[in-house]
Amino acid sequence: MIKPQTFKHIDEMVPWNGREHMLECVAWTPEAPDVMTFTFRAEEKNIWFRYLPGQYITLELPVGPEPIMRTYTISSSPTRPFTIAVTVKAQKDSIGTRWMFENLQPGMKLKAIGPLGDFSYVQHPADKYLFISAGSGITPMMSMTRDLGDRDPDTDIAFIHCARSPSDIIFRWELEYKARYMPFFNLGFIVTELERTQLWSGLRGFIDRAKIALLVPDF
Ligand SMILES: Cc1cc2nc3c(=O)[nH]c(=O)nc-3n(C[C@H](O)[C@H](O)[C@H](O)COP(=O)(O)OP(=O)(O)OC[C@H]3O[C@@H](n4cnc5c(N)ncnc54)[C@H](O)[C@@H]3O)c2cc1C
Image 1 (cartoon, rainbow, N blue to C red):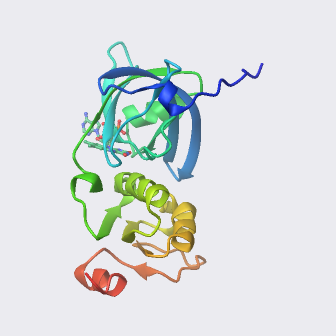
Image 2: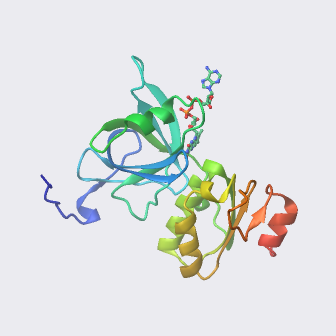
């Protein structure tokens, strides 16, 4: 049965107090090979998520008789405060993240600690930002970009991301969309591998000074 939704304005709700909370999984979204976004809401219905873009949470995962703790950056944006999301990559032989892939379903609840961390543009206000990431390291950059895109779409951001192949680029379509609607958002992808049949007009190799200079002339 579909539950009726209760509409509440944010000032009728209370902020996450930054200690321990139970989160209820509401969705999982495949992003790239071995990469998944899990979205949560607070178990207590009147809570909104208060955090800085770039901060992280630690999840308690009931993998065995003893739960294990894994830390993930919040990939969603505090400008959309009714849910929170983490985007996780399961490496070969992963225990914690792989458990999430194989077991975490909408309706399940996990204990979360946080948010914590100082890696946020909010702590370093500037006229323009250069975000550089590789692999799953894109998650704090994505949270900050989503936040700035909602708050101030005119922000000058150069976003450079390196992935193994074009299909491994996490959030590719959303970033390309942002590059269309944010007038000063410059996006550069770099891939290290390309299959013979894959079309690719971006750069190849690893992030280095020459590529940064090419993608961000004002660096
Ligand atoms: C601040 C912060 C933010 C982070 N944000 C993210 C994020 O947004 N997304 C994300 O995906 N990750 C993030 N991480 C990393 C995350 O916390 C985990 O460390 C990572 O996902 C690996 O955990 P796991 O459970 O997948 O693998 P684990 O089970 O911890 O294993 C990690 C690797 O170690 C190897 N290994 C495991 N056990 C052993 C052993 N006994 N002997 C030898 N090798 C072993 C495995 O081969 C595996 O590849 C973040 C970490 C920090 C500190």
